[in-house]
Every structure is written in C-alpha cells, then in structure tokens.
Image 1 (cartoon, rainbow, N blue to C red):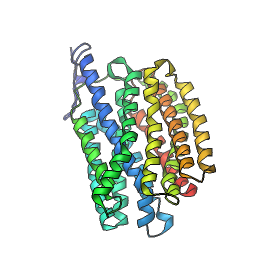
Image 2: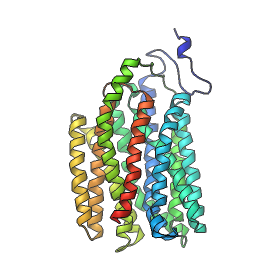
Image 3: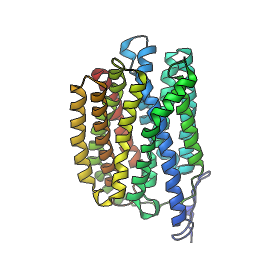
Image 4: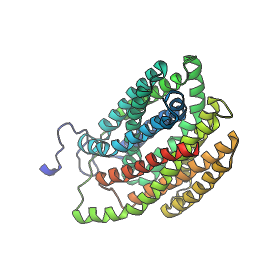
Length: 371
C-alpha cells in the first residue's frame, strides 16, 4: 500500500512501486546502459573542451594572467551545479535532471563555437561556464548508478569505465572536426563537444523509470555525514592534482608540438582516468575502497613528479596519464566507500561533490603556475 508520504511531487519522473514491481532487473540493466552511454559522451565533451580551453584562453585573453580563466570557469560552473543537480534529481528524477545538464552542455558548446569564431574572450568564459555546469550534472551519473538493482559496485564500475571510450575516440574526432572547421582553430572541436552532449541527451532521455528509495532516519543521516569526511578529503586531493596537471599539459606541450599533440596527451590522460574501472569490473575482488584510494595517492605523486621533471611531449603525456590513473583509483575508492552501506542522501552527495569541485577550482590556479 502506498502512503501519502510516498507520493511524488509535481513533475517528478520517478516510479513509485513496491519491491518486485517495475524496478526489475531488465529495467536496471537498461538504466545502467543508458547511464553508461550518457556518461561516456558527457566525458567525451569534457575531453574535447578541456583540451582546448587552456590554449584558447592563452590566445584570446587580454593578458596572460587571465589565460586560465576559461578553464577555471568550467570548474566553477561544475561546482555551482552540484547542489542544484542533487535537488533536481530529488524533485524530478534522474531522467529530467541529466537531460537538463546535457542540454546546457550543448548550448554551452555552441556559445564556445561562436566565441572562437568571433575571437570573443568573454563569450569563451561563458561557454566554458555552461559546459562546466553540464560537467557538474554528469558527476552524479556515478551516484545514480550506485543503488541500481542492488549491484552498486558493478554498476558504478560499468558507468565509470564506459568513459574510456572518450579517451579512445577523442583525438580522431578532434582531428576530423578541426579539418572540417579549418581555418577557424578550435571551433570544430567545440562543435564536436556540443554534439557529444546532444548524444548524451538522447541517452538520458531514454532512461527508464525507477522506484524511489525510502527516506532515511535522522540518526542514519548523521552517521552518513561522518562516513563521507575521509573520502571527501582524499577525493579533493585527487581533484586538485588532476586539474592542475590536466590544465598545464596542453600549455606545456604547445611550446614543443602541435595542438593535435596536446589533444592526444589529454586523451591519454582521460583514458587513464577511466580505464582502471574496466579492469576492476573484470576483477571485482580488487574493488576494495581503501586499497584503491591508497594506490591512487601513490600514482598521483608519481605522475606529478614525472610531469615536473619532463621536457618532452612523451614525458608530459606520461605524467598526465599517471595522474589520471591515480585520480581514477581515488574516485573509485571514495565512491565505493560512501555507497558501500547503501543509498546515501543526495544532499550529502551534493556537499561531497561540491567540495571535490572546489578542489578542482584550486587546481586550475596550480595549472597556471605549472605551465
């Protein structure tokens, strides 16, 4: 029997049913597939965007001190989106929330195209900000996958690992897009990012309904606050290091190679960010949160050292890849850690992701220093 307390709010796109109802295995598998597809194309858009923002900022900024502002605007948008994204997920469901995020990403990509064609720095910052909002929404894909069908670990690994596709195809797509848009540098890559968000929108619009989880008690909520403190601290370290190295890589490479080489280096970085999820998915016994986080911290240190000591494209790419792999293991470890005791209130997830992305903003400052 469904109580009045369980009734949905107006416009909520969630299914209310008892256990064993519509939330069956077939729907869970379809939901995981849609989430994985949407996340993969969202990350593809991020790869394309973040590979050009530092260089576009360097080219269009009125002063070198503002060169990293578009890159920072991306992560500021992502950080500001974390709380609204969680509220929209609660009020309207994952299908509406993720579709809105993808729509904003497509619009931001078009603004970025116009900025690059018109050589307008302010529009470049605005487009980056909108794309960052879409990136903030996409972070919740991994949380949305957590409780699916009681298979939290496997679903998170599949959704996270699907983004490896982004690293594999990003250099090819960027090369084709730039050739089509020539001589307007970077405009083709920005247009491809917009199209990637359109594809993510199609995937998220296909998400099936799912049963809403039950409300948790106040005591459980208080326990969950304490449970996210350490994962949040470790995750923030990962984001600071990752965004610093990722932002500095294109600017470091452009001094000794072409922009295509910069996209390739960022692509390797992104593959390293998500490929470990696929490995762990095949060997689920490796999915130990503490071990994954510790290994990730070691890789971060190794990657940062390799980047700082490098003077060639290969060295910068290797350093970025090590940092990407370290970030991946940390994100896997912390995500599995906060979800291992069951569903967690989305307000806590919003706080968790908001702090992580604040670390990312701090990392963009470090990118300017490293470059």
